[in-house]
Image (cartoon, rainbow, N blue to C red):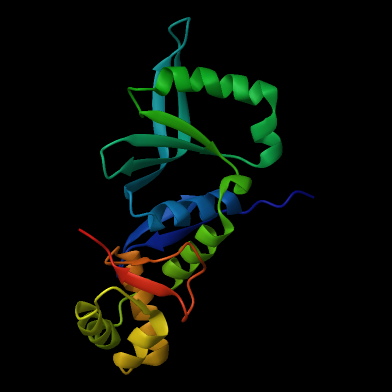
Length: 199
């Protein structure tokens, strides 16, 4: 019996917006894209229409289309590894890319779970889990961060703000909003070094 993983999640503060997914990989891809500082917009299940060689209307729903800070748009096709490796599927995908670029997107990318960095996935899941604002510790942490010169450990920021557990989550929210960035590529933890992100 095949397992089918579908659902949706809310992105953004307060009520946010609903993003649907049809596989666990799609869910992870969405979280990773939303966490990347170069991504300014994520659309899901985006309809692309075209006419085939016989002038018949065709359509395809791309799993995602991301818009980057520099204005480029990338259409994402998310598949499991066996499907992504299938020669017939890859041939079909090349034909789709020929039609979709550049009218619909500047580039088309095929993504499998193997293409995702486990560290980036872990951090994206954490960032999503703590996304809801908590005004008191968020404000206290922001005051501490304003005085930081260079880098500081997350635990030290939380201690200085006098809100250890909630302070950790507040720092992660500042990473989510791209006010802070990691000094090294690592899983976010209390020992992680962060610094203010250059504007």
